[in-house]
Length: 269
Ligand SMILES: [Zn+2]
Image (cartoon, rainbow, N blue to C red; front, side, top):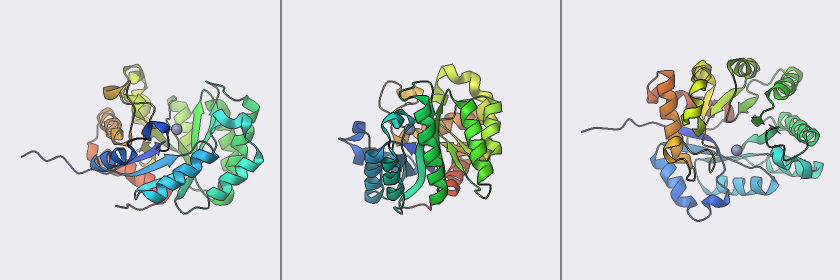
């Protein structure tokens, strides 16, 4: 008889409040648990989506919330919205501020408002003593400078946060790692176009690596074109274990330990 090794994974970045899960959210969460994904961080992108994320975290064991305002929404964000996020973040199921960051690829919001909203939320994270979940697209140079300044001003913070869906070269990875950040990788690592990034995937130290889906987006190659969901984080973990030349059990154990350390939670069932 063949037995599948029992592994535990954490999907460190999912958008379970998305409309795409409106009709079968229960099944999606059950499938995740069956696949060994015992914990999911569901990530808000606005005040409303943060509220929904907290409701999901209250409703389902193993689900925790990260809340923040996405750079895409920066142009319509006021300081009152930041205060709302700060109030919501007092909820015991909130484990991080995010996703927050810079997106100079889509540029849906002017860059100066993206920078302002990011700065407000970085300061808030310090006040609330929560790690941050950073979104960064085509803005690593600016982001490294901002986070360097931030971590220098608050040197007592041991785990400043995570760079979600990290895609960058070894130099960029080193910059974030030196500041104490974790790097989280998603389903895009299974895309043939990203074969040339395997050196970066091997470079990240085992004690700073995490896995995520960013679902419903970025579906792994096997199901590309369909909706992504937390159970598929397993395909990313399998691919990553192979690239790094370690058993899946090892990769699962390490990434799960890192997620629990950064977000400060225990396993729930
Ligand atoms: Zn996301």
